[in-house]
Length: 206
Image (tube, rainbow, N blue to C red; front, top):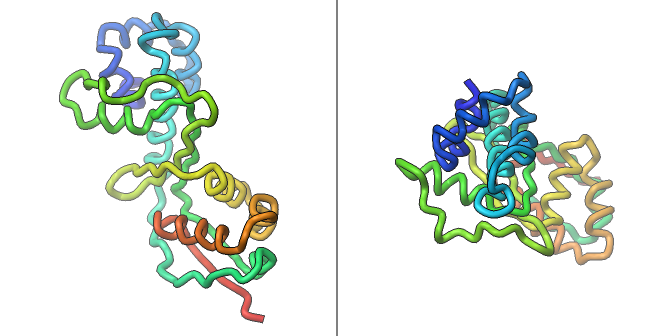
């Protein structure tokens, strides 16, 4: 059952090692498996340093598939903001299928490479060392055809994060973009729309 949640983790580790590890994992909470791997995986500091993060990504994808909701993104044209304060006129909601993921490893690229491989994937062309200065920021969006992930800038990641937490668009925008030109926030909105993540967009014309 657990291999259903972590197929790429199993593929990279190999069935023998994966089975040995899972035989000692007794929690019913599969979300705890990545931490278990971090604490128990051999060669964690060298060969398999990215594996706990890969398994965390897989669990994120699995839960996204389990709770998928039919979603049609808005195609409304987004008007450019003249000043940052114009964000107070905007009402915005996002796809219910968004999952946020942040990691020091390029786990989405690793996941893709493994998914496309028939056997143990060749990861030689990927940089498997953790980033030093800033992590990778991913927006994972589940569709009826499967998961998609998009690497985004830190500011866009936190803009989406704030909205998903139930904060108003204006309050999040004011915090993140207060000292930037309005065009920067407009570009962020356009980026989010280009990823087909906006559920509803309204602007008060008064």
